[in-house]
Length: 459
Image: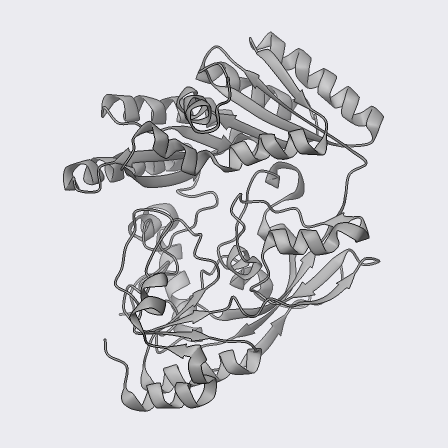
C-alpha cells in the first residue's frame, strides 16, 4: 500500500531524516534470517523515545496504516516483515540502560539494548542476564517473542525474567505493567500478556528484567554418543536425577560434520551433548562427576572439558553458530528452519521421528536442541529455486509440529509464530485461538499492529 501523503508529511515533521522512504532503508527491513520473505515496508521510522513511538502509532492509527516493530531482525518466522505493507518502527536507537539495581537484582532499559551489550555493562556488578537465544538479539524483541535459549533449563525463558514493561498501545496510549516487587496478585498479569505477543497488541518501549548472580565456578564439556537415542536418553536421565544443569544441548551427527567443515574442529561425526554447570567449586565438581557417570552408562565417550573462559566461549560460539555452519553442508541453499517442544518423556521418540522424516524425504536437515526442556530444532537445507523442495521441507516441518501436538507438546518452543506457523495455531489452541483474536480486537480494533501475524484475521 502507498502511504498517504499527509501521513508521510506528519512523520517527516516529527522525525526529520529518521523517517525514511528510500529503497535502501526499506529493503534492509525486508530480509529475514530464514526463508520467509515479504515486500519491503512503505517506510521506516527510527524512534528514539517513548513519546515518538506514541506519536508514530497515533498518526498511523488515524491513517489506518500498519506498524511493525523491528529490533535486530534475527527472528526466524518472519515476525518483523511488513507482510501487509505499512511503516516499520525501528527501535534500535532506543538502546539506553536506564537503571541497574544490584541490590534488587534488576535492570530497567529500553528495548533496543541487546543482550550482549547488557551483559557487558553488568560485568562489574557480579550479575548477568541469563536468557541466551544465541543471536545478539534486542531485549525488546526477545520479550515480544518470549525468547528462550541454551540456559533456559536452569534460569527460565523471557516469561520468567521480565518483571515489568512500558507499552504503547494501538491508540498511542502508554501503559505500565508490573512493578519492581518480587510478586503481585493485583489483577490480570498484563506483563505476561505482552511477553510473546509478537508486536500485535502493543509496542514495548521499556523493560524491567530479572538478573542473576554470576556463578563462582563454571565448567563446560562436549561428549559424543553412539546414536541419537542414547544422547537424548542421557538428557532425560540427567534431568530425572536432579542434576542442576545450566545448559544441556544436543547436536546430531550432521551438525558435528558442519562444525568440522566450518571451524576445522575434529569432533567425531556422531551425536553430541554440550553441557555446562554453574555453582560453587565443590558443587560443580560433584555435578560434573554425576553427569559423567550417567553419560558413560549411556555410551558417551570423548569428554572434552572446557574450564577456562576462553575455552568455554569457543565451545558456545560453536553451538550458537550451528545455524550458519549448517550451510556448508549444502552451499547455496536456504534454510527452512523449525522448532517444536515436547514433554521430556517423549523427547527421544520425537527427535527420532523427525530424523526419519528428513531421511525419508532425501533432505539434508541437521537437528539441534535445547533438550533440557524438550525443545529441538531442524534446519532443512533447500534449493531456493526449487518450489518442490521448499514445499517438501514445509511438509516435514508440519509433520514435526503435528507429532509434537499428538504427544502433548507445542508447535514452537521458542521461535514463535510470525508468518511461518500461523496456519497451525488452531490445531494447537482450538477455540482458544479465537479468544486470542478477541483480545487483539479489543486492544487493536483497527488491526494496525503487525497485522497478518499470530492471531486470526479479523472477521
